[in-house]
Image 1 (spheres, rainbow, N blue to C red):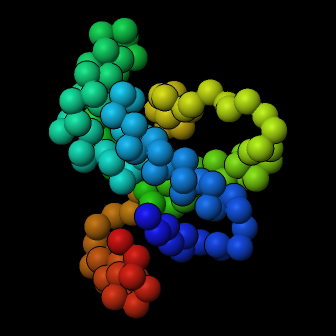
Image 2 (image 1 turned 180 degrees about the vertical axis):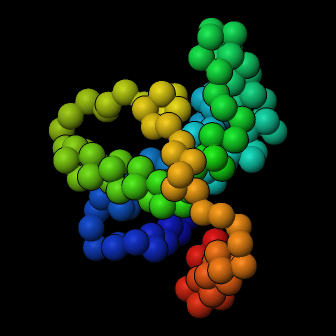
Image 3 (image 1 turned 180 degrees about the horizontal axis):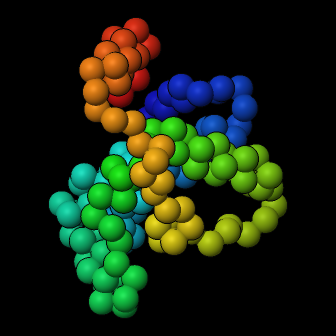
Amino acid sequence: MTIVVTENAQDPIYCLLFWEELVRFMDNKKPLPDVPRYEALRHLDPVTAEYDAAQAKAGNPRPEVYWRDMSFDQQQEIYKELLEECFELDWFNLAPRDEITAPWQRWTPKPELKDTLNWKYKAKRLAWQLGCGFP
């Protein structure tokens, strides 16, 4: 298997983060990681759907469109916050930290940051997608 880390590949943290995401994605005993990339696919994975149903029964329901209710800028803020935590973590000598299983309890969507879908926003996003390859 060949892994290509698109971030700063000379820093081992990015390689470790990619490896952790890959291992977590391939573990079919746990639900999918709660990240924007997999939000639309959560209901298709039986383990994840079962986990979300159990969370709802326990009185801690996961919002169905949690990540989609956030603006891209807010998602980037969360990414930077988590990345800072990763740089502070001693990856090789400490026991693993608890997994963030309910991000909606830690971060709430801020509707005032969400971009409006006017023509300026669409033109800006299209320019980013064509020029930089952004999603």
